[in-house]
Picture 1: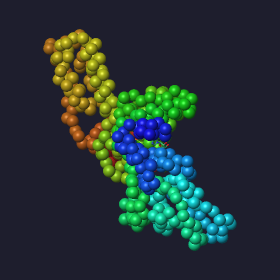
Picture 2: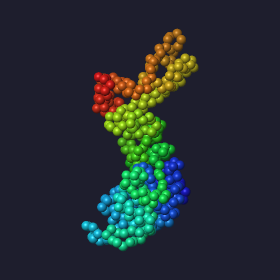
Picture 3: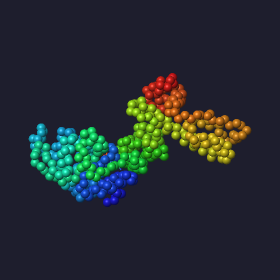
Picture 4: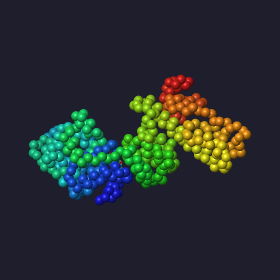
Length: 405
Ligand SMILES: Nc1ncnc2c1ncn2[C@@H]1O[C@H](COP(=O)(O)OP(=O)(O)OP(=O)(O)O)[C@@H](O)[C@H]1O
Ligand SMILES: [Mg+2]
């Protein structure tokens, strides 16, 4: 079965070479009995891989069981995996087979394998090496024929150096490692996945699908997606349900994206505390709004040029057009100065736009925007904070800090 057919069969969306590579390894290793370790951040789609491996292997008619090692209490995990004898512990009224016995001839998926206690890791290593295991409370050695595929979103080498994971088990598990790439390394797949989830949501909730305008698409692609595909799916569902307008713009999408994780924007502040987070939030909003205003301004100028229809207007105001296109960051263009059809240059002096000495100081920009927001809302902090996209408390603190009373 080729990679495309696998994607179709398992409902995997994406065309990224990194994803294809991961699927290709799974496909090739399926026919063997080799143990496979799937690595990848949370929400990247690791759970497709053990299914691919099982279904393309000669064990496909045998049992397949997925066990979430992180969800089973430490006290019962050995019994769950290897079984127990009657009376081996309080409550063990009957003997019970463990997964390694039940799955004989099939595939066992050990999800979140790094969560296994060290004592269970010893038992696991033994069964992987020899096919032998012992039920809890028994001394009889039993044999099984199970293929293990394990997965983790943790950094196992790190767990090894912290004494939480056995190095020998790591080597045994990762005979063939498969790394599932995070979404930010598969940017070409982001919009593709969004469209799929949007159409799924439309079908599920019986409403037209949402679509992104160009600005929103760029925003979606530049976001870091720490929660990967799971996060993208949840976000698409959320917007599908909440937004009335099915055409989603950049500013609308911005409301749903937690700030501070845009890979293509400069990292302005590094810090964990709440106030730093709010500062970052404010600055992203400022940058975003500036870009938005700039686009409007460009459009306005273009319309004037086209509407005026006189070549000389364009020529005589070349410096101004140039200036606007350099993205000076001005929020209010003195529109009355230029491009008034009929206002001929030469005789009447053209009022030069007020010269702004561009400052790249983020602090100054911040002060400027806070001032403007306060002026616009007649000093009403609540409204100004809302406009700035920060909390009133943060705004209050900043007013004090910059002495803007
Ligand atoms: N390429 C993809 N195409 C379509 N859906 C995907 C894709 N990758 C992941 N998903 C979906 O994203 C969700 C998360 O995937 P999955 O549960 O496999 O994540 P995971 O890697 O196991 O994360 P965790 O480590 O948190 O368990 C699932 O609903 C899955 O169906
Ligand atoms: Mg998982």
